[in-house]
View 1 (tube, rainbow, N blue to C red):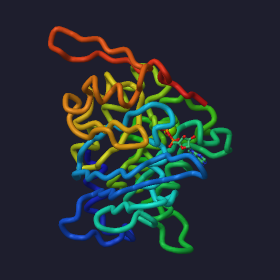
View 2: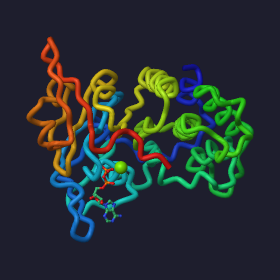
View 3: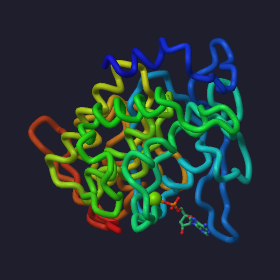
View 4: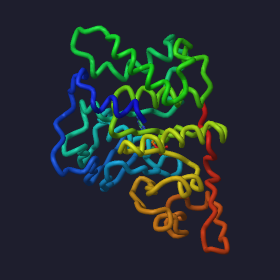
Length: 281
Ligand code: ADP
Ligand code: MG
């Protein structure tokens, strides 16, 4: 993707990244626990991610997926444990882009597509400096990557669900994010919009952008991701879909809310019957 190469090489960008610790993994979570009053959302979760990998995070509603993303993004403090991104605490790390669940965003806010994408550059702009021509060029290029350039002036309230997700991906691109946390970006999208998003993910992979995607569709997680994380407050598994989606672990995660279908190859076709996909706005 010429655009990302241009960004990496550009010398006009003001680099405010935390210095990355040499040899540190892009993401390391150590003994993370989060309690909200009397609810335990995460218990003793530890894992590491490699640069450039694409990880699906699955688990029933209330499993702690959104909480995990908020802790990694630095917008929620863990009750115990730590997260390190390239060896540093996440707060202020502008190499992390967090795309919240669609239901948590106020889509009626009167702002254009280009403005939303420019918000990704805010961390890059020198204090008291207005966006420059080159910032708007980067916004335009980011919109081209997600094929939304023709809608740059459109209000975000007037977009479809798939277009809204693409705008948020463009914002993450403009931010030059190295780690993207996407909370249920596929929920409520039709199959064409889902395929569009996966095509963009494939492009990002070529540039070693690491992506975590919370989702409900286990079949899609198994087919389209290198590794999957199965979460239900505790970390039940992290590995290839074959390693993680075993009937034993799935029953641990979903209890009775799951249909397991054994196929000839011994593969499980599986359906999360408790939540469906969706949680639309
Ligand atoms: P998921 O995204 O997997 O559905 P969440 O991280 O949203 O899970 O929620 C995990 C648990 O924490 C749930 O039991 C939820 O009700 C609870 N929870 C989430 N956010 C809050 C909050 N701000 N205050 C109290 N409880 C919360
Ligand atoms: Mg959630």
